[in-house]
Length: 178
Image 1 (tube, rainbow, N blue to C red):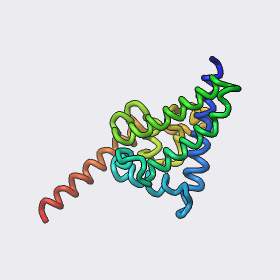
Image 2: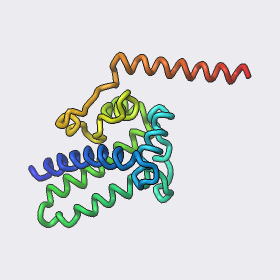
Image 3: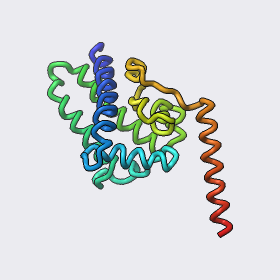
Image 4: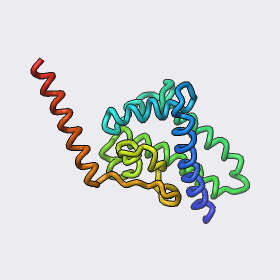
């Protein structure tokens, strides 16, 4: 049973590493396969108050969410050969990958749920530092690596939300008068 917990920890470490060094490292370069994360997913989440509507689209369309699903399926398949040798560890890894996908998808379809249940991921997209809070499913490795930066519930967030609400009000008022 310890193997399952180790598998979850291992998956969380992988989540942290891939998010930081692949999705934000290699993904910052336009033209890179990984650029979907920064140039599509982050852009859309910031524009839409954390929501990313591609998660509601069918997975067979080629968009940021389908590329993420392909990446996760590849990671899961790469670990399946370990099943006979380390079944509990492998189950923990596969469960962690499933948790990542299901939580990440739900979060970007329901921002209020994310703000309440995954504040570390909400902080990653909506906070002032998008180069922190790398974990999605659980913030364990952000704490271990010292990259957890709280934003939800802070004075800064309250001010940012008020400013976004006012900006939206001004845009609606301007549109109504033209």
